[in-house]
Amino acid sequence: METDPNILIQKARDSLIKYQHQLVIGNMLSTRKTEVVLVTEKDENWIRTEGKDIEIEGLIIPKCIELHQQRIKEGKLLEDPANESAVEGD
Image 1 (cartoon, rainbow, N blue to C red):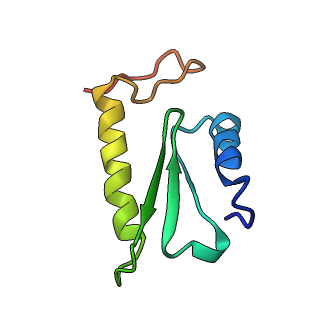
Image 2: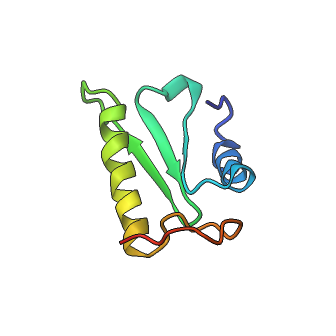
C-alpha cells in the first residue's frame, strides 16, 4: 500500500525484480477499496470499481486468472531461470 502516487508503479516494478514475481498488485492507501494496478513485466492494468457497490477483490480475481491463463498460453508458466526443472504450461 503506497501513499505517494508518483512512485507506486516504480515500487511495484522494483518488487517484481526483487521478489522474482510475475505480478504485483499495487494500490494507494487512499483508494485501496476502489482502485488497484496489476503490474507485470510488460503492462500495467488498472482496475477500478467505477462507483459500483462491489468489492474490488471481485474484479481483481478474474483479471489475475486472465493474466495467468495468458502466461500459460505463452508458455511462461513457472518460467524461472534459477530453476532448471521448471514445468512449462499446458
